[in-house]
Image (cartoon, rainbow, N blue to C red; front, side, top):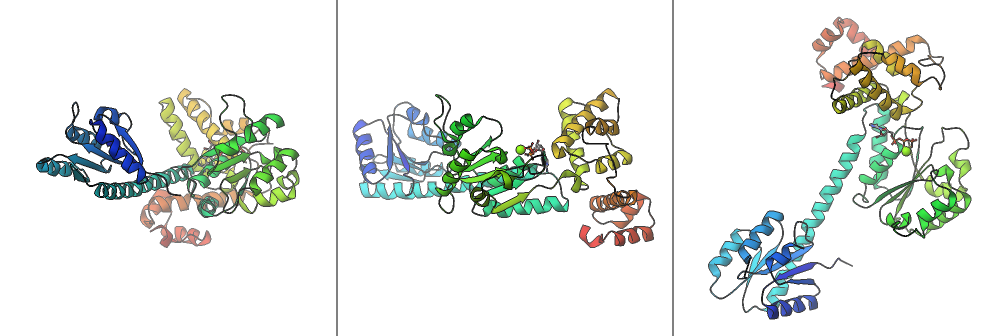
Length: 443
Ligand SMILES: Nc1ncnc2c1ncn2[C@@H]1O[C@H](COP(=O)(O)OP(=O)(O)OP(=O)(O)O)[C@@H](O)[C@H]1O
Ligand SMILES: [Mg+2]
C-alpha cells in the first residue's frame, strides 16, 4: 500500500480549518491542522512528506510571509494558497513566489481534493528522487573509501557492484585487515537496501546468551530493538560467523528461512578462514553454510595488490600528516621496494598503522621505514624474506610497477617517461613489451 501523504492546513478560522481537514481526511489524506503559520513552522519544513494549504490573511505571520519562509526551507514544497474575494493580485504574487496553485473562497471541495492529489503526487516524486540521489551518494561515498587500482581490487569492485544488486545472502572471506567490514558496508550501500539500516555485530565478541539476546531479544530495558528487528529491510552483518554456536546457528537458519525471496533482510556473514583453527565450512552446519555462501566475496591479501601498497601508504601518510600537522614522509625507491615486498600479515590495517608511525617518526626526524616493518613483522617470521622467490622476480615486479606508474601519471607521453626514468626509448619499449604494457592503455 502506498504511504498516506500528509496535507497541512493552516488557517486562523477554526470552522474552516476543521471542515477542510475533515474533508481531506475523508478523501484519504493524513490531514494536520494548524491555527497559525508559526505553529505550522514547528512541524512543516524541508522534506515534509506532503503538501501545505494555507490561508493568506492571518494575524501574526501572514500567508505570504509563511510561503516565503517555506520556499526558503524547501523550494519544491507544494503550497496551495487560500484567497478571499478580490485577492487575485495577491494570488498572482503568491504563484510568482513559488506557490503551486490557489483556491478561491468559498471553495469547491472537489477542486480542493483534486489540487491536494496533484500536490501530493508531485511531492512523492520529489521525495523519492531525493532519497534515490542520497542513496547513490552514500554508495559512491563508501566505494570511494576503497583505495587501489590493482587487478584484484578492480575485480573486488566489480563483485561488490554485481552482488550489491543480486538477491540472496553473502559470505565475505579474507585475511584479517583486508577490508571485509568495509566491503560489507559497500555491498549494502550500492544496492537497493542503501538508506536502510546496516547493522554489524561480531559473533565472537559476546557469550552465547548475550549474543542470543542481542540478536533475537528480549533485550534489557533501554537496550533498543533486537538486531534482527533493527536490521529489518536492510542488512544484518555478522562478523566472525565461525564463532556462532550450534543453537544460534539453528536460530539464524530459521530467521533466514523466514525471509522469503527476495529476502527482506539481507544477511552478510564475514569469516576469516585464514586464521588458525577450523574453516568456516567446518564450523557451520551445512544447511546454514549453503544459504550463506551462495554468493561469495573474497578479499585479496594486501601483498597481492602490487602498487596499491604504495598508493595506500601515500594516501594514509598524507592523512596522518594532516592530522598531526606535519609533513608527510617522502619515501625513497628503496623504501618503496621494502613496502612492496613486506609480507603484510595484518594487511591494510597493518599498513595504516605503519603509515601513522612513519609520520610520527618523520616528525621526530628519527627511524626508518625498514625498522618499522622489521619491528612489526617480528611475530610473523623474519621481515622481508623473499619467501623462496628469486630476487629477480622482485626486481622485475618493481620495475614493471614503476614503469606502469610513470606511464599512468604522464598519460602515455613517452618522452616524459623516458626523461623521468632516464631510459632511452629503445630500452623503454623493450621493457614495456616484456611486461605486457601497451602505450595505448595510458592515452
Ligand atoms: N582498500 C582499502 N582502501 C582504504 N582503506 C581500507 C581498504 N581496505 C581496508 N581499509 C581500511 O583498513 C582497516 C581495516 O579494514 P576492515 O576493518 O574492513 O578489515 P577486516 O577485513 O574487516 O578486518 P578484521 O579481519 O579484523 O575484521 C579499516 O580502517 C578500513 O577502513
Ligand atoms: Mg572486520
